[in-house]
Image (cartoon, rainbow, N blue to C red):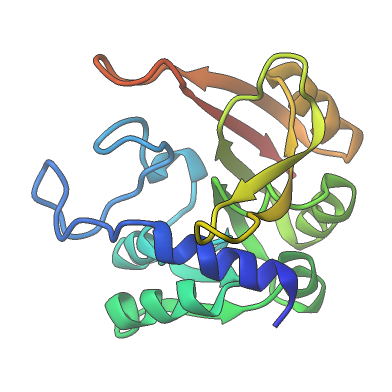
Length: 222
């Protein structure tokens, strides 16, 4: 296992499982934010029924499973074996869902069919060098296809490559992974530099009564 997969396996053990149903009583749903029952849904992808869509950093698979339930050909990719084990245990029998353990860039470079939409929810787009990842995404998106991703807004003054720390035991140093933080106009610039169009980036405010941290949602077209 690579250091990166070990780090995300460790993170997986610290994450709670997705609820059996959401606030509307649904067994599958799409969530772009870190808050329950908050924010837009899968419509941001603008994917037609039956479209092939890719989740980069799918984690335990809940969002991809929802897209499969909607009738899409949902492909989830994650570098963490433990995340994917949890995804397969809960969603492995879902029709239309594929799950793969792979590095995001490697998977995109090896794929030959392409996608109508690519998305990432606090996932690989946040934790992969955009100079490597964005060209690979654009190469695999069908003309007019959508790239949509969400992540935490940056800390003021801390832009570009930053360090995220994943805690371990009390006597162990935390694991470190890299992430890429930009303000909305920074992401708009980076995406346009890599040939994307129709780029928008906005911070969705947290729901009332929650912490003040919102969710940065970025949309672009190939």
